[in-house]
Length: 248
Image (tube, rainbow, N blue to C red; front, side, top):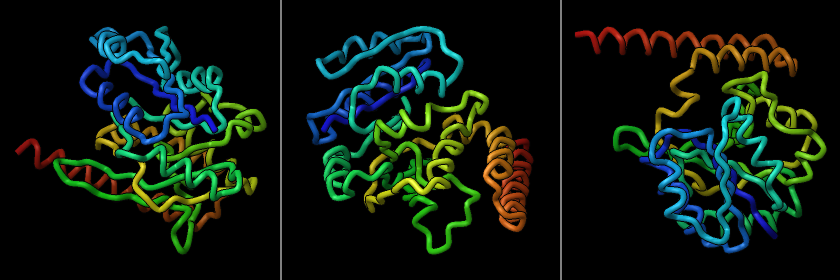
């Protein structure tokens, strides 16, 4: 079984080496790592070239954003399962071995997914997928995309990521799979480490706007949408308070 890992990157010379190395240390040899560079102007490509090996492929050209890059990678992928690993994230040692075992146990589930560890100001916070909660409220993405492995025939049946979304196309895609009752198999282990401050964190206002669109698209109940608005309001208040404290 071949696992394809796709990394979309633009100007990530400080983190891309750790991303590449983490795939190599995944404990599983039947993989390919496809890097889609958006025309980086820093030393990203120098780092990629210095770490070239027989299971690493890369291209560098302008794209229309992270999901366009992911779609290009999906088109190049030959794996039975496909995952995306951002250029500032990395797998924990042995992650791919654990995922491969989970795939075998899942009897070919459409989606195999695990936990994420957020790294923020020296602290580690483990985040579990919303779909595993006792009550899944459908306002959040079912699984955590950087720790999600999707069967390749799913992309053949559902297509690729919708470029109308700039920051939440993964949410849209996984909600669509959930609504259509595709099989989700949960691996209760940390798979991916994420540095706090990625695109979805930095552009939270746009993310919330696109999430509202997704809720309407999939008919999320009014009371659940109201709960989401409460969470958005709390996030705005925290951001305002933080800005005041910074000024002082």
